[in-house]
Amino acid sequence: MPETLTVRIGIAAARELELQVDDPKVVSDAYAKAIADGDAVLWVTDTRGHEFGISVAAIAFVEFERPQERGVGFGRS
Image (cartoon, rainbow, N blue to C red; front, top):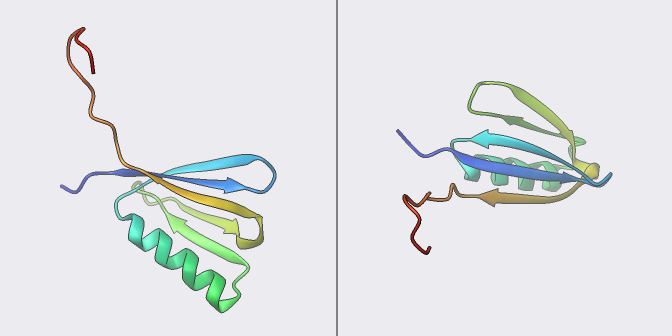
């Protein structure tokens, strides 16, 4: 099973929308296409099948975050 990644999209109104996605390339490609085509809305589907429409003009940034490995015990990291 592929690892799940977190996508955080910053909205110009100082808010973020955080989604879990399986393939960040799908999101980055869709964002690039929306900008190139002059689309008003970026549509993203999360790992649970929920669709989100985000105003392209309101997007301030897109950040991709890989899951962090958690340590075990009390040792230094």
